[in-house]
Length: 482
Image (cartoon, rainbow, N blue to C red; front, side, top):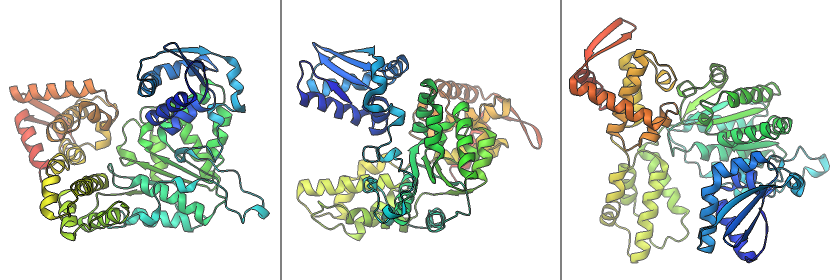
């Protein structure tokens, strides 16, 4: 963001810019601030100038809090934020936020390379900043839980024409989906440097689509998204309950697919289990290679720990295999938990200047282990409830409100709230982007039914079924605890 300096110093303004970018992330900062917005700080007021009313409204509704926090973190004072429209900013630096594509200045979350270079220039790799990617396939630990996904990625990298499109990778939090996607991008660039590619999250896709509609730059947006050799989108489940964005992405996918190019997607759930996703889009997703990355097994978790330790440059004492085994045995959910535990243990060892031992690991990680790896996972609850009521998990995540689906959804929300540490908002997002108030209401309904031991009726494949609330709850809890 270029800034107009009045009575504040250049250093303070630069610090505010850095603080804001850190709070909202480099991609959002680049789209909404960097190339089309100016600010001025004076007499306790922060004046934000924007090219049109749409951008002013969007920034005010979505980033006012972060702007105030950035000013406070730098100046130590609260500033009143005001917005003003300056049409002259439409040509600021010759680009709008949507058109900002410079590879040297674009964050790795959404970098767009130039079209293929002339033959005389292809011997010289482009300065694409690929080294800024956090992950690569060289550091991807392969085990039984992710071997199929890894092999599919290698096929895409090594083959000129992929045998499947799209590659759809799904799995829980922290199992390596983003690592695999970034690794594919980096390996593809190493093997074919002139590849025209785009890597971003589904949220970025949706935000840029909305911006293109409001600013009448839809054709620019479409050219950018569709004229690619490789389109990689993370967290595609974010498109749930966004029908217009889903329709736009469907056309984008079809255009790329018909051109013989590659699409790679990642999600927290199987396409059929993403609530409020159009049938057309689900069919396109399952027409390719859908592969799940499961939670890593014990052997893979141990190898992940060893690799993480080998990359810690500040490590002054070795980590015994017994400690690695202890951590891998007790933390079973995802990679982030393993790395967090190791980081805590290594930091404690450095502060105390003591060797890492099994007894130290047990003492230091006691609280950490208690907070991780719940006994029951939401996927277990969904599967058990759906099977019990004779429906699919996807139906529970949908907007259907018939008696059987609604009843199963309510029991699933109640059991998830009871057996996991997820908040109502988190449960709502998992259950098809429902409001947290919907979750609270569902829990109260089930509590009331159980307290009264009310009669429960639903329709199954075998016909109408009748049972008592306490019996249903008991049978479901027994099922998910197996």
